[in-house]
Length: 177
Ligand code: SF4
Ligand code: SF4
Image (cartoon, rainbow, N blue to C red; front, side):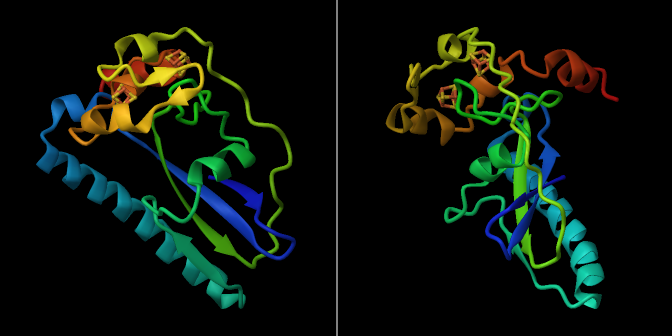
């Protein structure tokens, strides 16, 4: 969880949950939606508890859905120090790589906002571009029209192959801890 400033009066709290590694290769699409539903529920439960606490102090809060099309959650993640975008366009966190699902809530509570810089963890190894079945990744970013036919069938090869966070997180996950 990290904090940022939307304007002088509105702050946001950014929350991330870990996505299981190789989730989509292991699970069918139906199971995938079940996994995502349980992750959304995690956010919901956390917000219910946090909002009930902040409400008591008279602060106003509004949740942003992890699948919001209006809010650029990755942009908020960059601003709040989680990490810069990698070549695969995902936010690359030191420990979890690109395997974080974000949500956020806005609050009028006077929390202290993060003011530093996000780490640029992409090592430009090109593995994400090499493995991409749609040849969608180049130095300018991800070409959506090339990615979409595969991502709609639950492709996430560019995330799974990325070595950022691998030593700290992927190996731990593989041991099932
Ligand atoms: S696979 Fe390599 S080039 Fe692609 S985002 Fe990860 S670190 Fe960057
Ligand atoms: S999701 Fe799949 S098709 Fe889309 S950029 Fe990543 S590897 Fe390529």
